[in-house]
Image 1 (cartoon, rainbow over the protein chains, first blue to last red):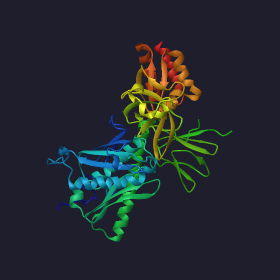
Image 2: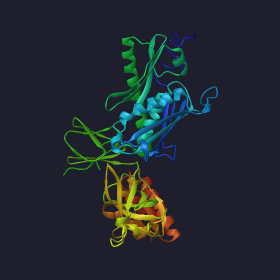
Image 3: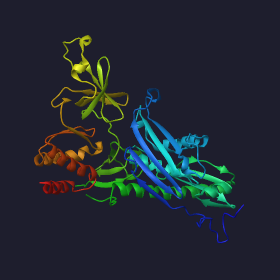
Length: 242
Length: 224
């Protein structure tokens, strides 16, 4: 096993322990969708598109007093090194469910009775932490679609590599490292909506990792905000008197 | 005199603290008021509201809308009103009360694909919007060019007390039928319709900026 942290304390891609991969978010890339976004999170390249609220495809799906949220996470065959079968795999089904459950607390579904909101997430190129990147993209796309939300959702993973807690695991660190802890967080309401743990952490390490993941999520929220503001308002004029 | 304070907000962003009365798109947790939509938050006296910038049309009672007939049943039509709900137009409200419901010939009034201008009679969370075509300017639309804009920007196209639409009517020789659901029917010569389209596009794209009316006036001057 090669060392994930060198003598200078830097990781294999030259990052510090609490440093994130470069992230760029853009909004409104899919014209046919009601809301959409594109995120580059390290080597991840992900498109998220939101359709709706609309009539459900099947009438039996409709719930009388609330709307429903559907989510599809899909990796294109060329997104990984070896060709991936385009059929939805077990992993993709799980991540679709996890993303749906991470976003449901943020959406005011009561405002849309008997309707359906669809989120489509397409991974064009995948790296470690694609579920977190997908949640970020989906959250921006939901806001772009003008859907009522209690809060935006920022997501970032923390993990343990070579016995130390670090932020934002890349693919290699995810595979070779000791633990991976993806977190989705609503920064204004101060609530965690997703927390998964793959690996082993002691109690202290866990607390440290959660704090690190939450701070990473807050950074991502700022990036989401910047992306949305630059699309909708050229010059942000917070609190300007008119 | 207190002024209107405007602020750009995202979903979940804090708008104000204290005691306020609030309308749609705002929620309250222990006297902290958050926005639920991306848009422009306005506070005036003790009132708060958020004007959204995107999103589908949500039906409101007394709105005038433009829809397309998509289907019909024994005694009703289903109308696509550019929303997540399908409008229902009951045949009883269209035919004379002297005609028995057995004799209703639905296709003689509206066929599938027909465009109509209607008013929303009733709508709440439990039922689909009920439409009515009884009233001035309502009913079947026979000719014109249809364009669709973001339904949240219709208010800006009409302007305060109709100032913007008056300006357009004075300068471009086109008859406008505006639906609150973002559908607009333009009637006029092809040239003037094209002119109107460019102006409406400008209004849609720059609706969040102030002094919009000056920009429109400038564009209209250049077009002449």
